[in-house]
Amino acid sequence: MTAMNLLDGRIASAKILDNIAANSVLVTKQKGRAPHLSIILVGNDGASETYVGSKIKTCERVGFSSTLIRFDNTVSEKELIDKIREINSDSEIDGLIVQSPLPAHISFTNITNAIEPSKDVDGFNPINTGRMVQNIPSFIPATPKGILLLLEYYKITTTGKKCVVIGRSNIVGMPVSILLARNSDPGNCTVTICHSKSIDIPAQTKDADIIITALGKPGFLTSEMVKEGAVVIDVGISRVADASKKSGFRLSGDVDFQEVAPKCSYITPVPGGVGPMTIAGLLSNTLSAALGEFYSR
Ligand code: NAP
Image 1: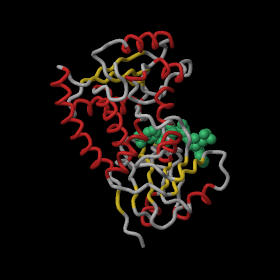
Image 2: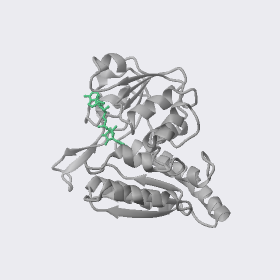
Image 3: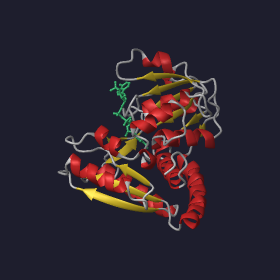
């Protein structure tokens, strides 16, 4: 049986955040102000409040300043874009994110298009996506960036490996597939992307050295779908009813952890795997924005 190792996102992200904090001190000295992240939050969705709260707390931890701009669910797309344009031209703000989901009457595409690429620390603006595809340094969406940082931290070899990604969303599945196929390290994988129209996903995963699940279906990946020694990265976070919890639910990944873990060489837990790495990815992007790394201003 394979010796299983945990890809612990709490440990890896703590180290990365310490490094960001050290760099934050230097940037603050250099610029006369701390790196600054602005967050726009529309409405009061519970999960979004939690994510935004932990982004703000983590900014404090690394010595960044942050601003939270709240809008009502009834805000118009124009009002939101006007605010984005104001932030785009504010030289005191380095990075801007708009927390998703947005209300149905607002186009996520129009919003991400409005964010100045040099401040687009979520990496959703098509300019950053295009640069990512062409392997030009740019902001990479926070979760895929966090996954790359985790692979690097645990020194997982990706070159030449067969990688199966389940899920093709613009925020996780598609970018992580592109990144792992790029001519870079981490990267250089032979990547297969699966989605809801794929036929016989187990036939793909059984052969994979690295499996990334990003579909949001609790316990989807079972042990018969995984080969001995595989690296499994579980991005999924779903709330599953659990009467034994005070909240009435527990968080579940896309992987049947109990069954799958004994077969893996490395596996991420949920929670405590990709989640903390996502925030590390976002703040690493914000530091890059403050340093003007990818775009000259
Ligand atoms: P999404 O936009 O809903 O995309 C889900 C993807 O999974 C789609 O491409 C869909 O295929 C595919 N899919 C759905 N059911 C499937 C099935 N039965 N078999 C194969 N593919 C299937 O979700 P997302 O935003 O990428 O998020 C995915 C999960 O990751 C969610 O649980 C989310 O909460 C979690 N997440 C976690 C973090 C983190 O920091 N840890 C960050 C972001 C997201 P189609 O394209 O064909 O519809």
